[in-house]
Length: 464
Image (tube, rainbow, N blue to C red; front, side, top):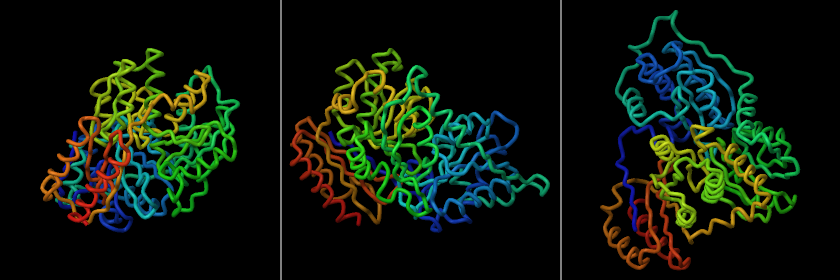
């Protein structure tokens, strides 16, 4: 079955699938525009479009380790202060940590300055509501409209009503305690040797503390951020060094986070990669066995491997499939009162603990299964058998409706016919990068490679 996602391009569109993102000092990630974004958020707080538990307008801002984070942090703070909003800066902290602090500090909103897994040249803005969940698309569109169409200076309060900014010094400690409390009290990590890659990113301090304080021996990679080396051949997108280190140090497990630590990829004691599908699968089976998987349902996206769906259904677990992006997974989980969902890329959401993907909490959940079962990581991961899958990312210069490209529909129909119902194609534009993603799945690795290349050649010709 072919699945195609078309996205119409909107002039001056700010938000993608995961907040605002772009190259630092290039629109929209320039100081002037970021100040306006801060003012727009402040105006929505004034108008109570962003609901708050507290009458005081207070926003928590965290970031990863990118050089441009300083610039954007100050611009956002200035915009918010100018609208009478008080700002609390927490410095480098994982994205899910900001969701947690926003909720527990009774803030009106939380903001993360990060471009997640992208290289250091990019940066981004993710916004949480007072409930710790990412803001809905309706609020994103209103921020977009205000920034693009309104003169926000006419809404500025009087001089005596401007806000202030201060730093919160103990934010990292608060997150460490919160994450540790998701691990079962009856277990420790004593005796486990872990290789931990923190991608020179937001979790470089908090992540090792979490696992060490629970008793693990931690060998850390990607723990020397300098502003320009975040995600630079380290982290969840580049697990090769993790694999090598697990083998070299004879570790029990490897854990690799991305730049803002909202996703995780792991590897077993043999150095075999354990991706998000496998993490979801082994945790889903464990929760089902314990009677803790709400409504016996798991939420995944179209990018998840069919092997995961097959294994879940064989064990009485229903699978709900949504669009690509962790916010769509969270929406489905909230709508149907579910507590586990995620993406193959490593965004894993444990709804009983977190409002968004959390790499540290997901890794702790896997380690809890490891401790409870007494099995090795390779044994647990082997329970999920993947159907061969090929993913190609093609860079594009322009976007247009995919189905309107001459010969595209015919090619997809031809491939579907040859797959004979035992495979699928899925093509979509990335919401965070100038690429189009082509996924082909089926039993014959050689054939699906050929199919993916055919689609890629056609689209590159038309879009690059």
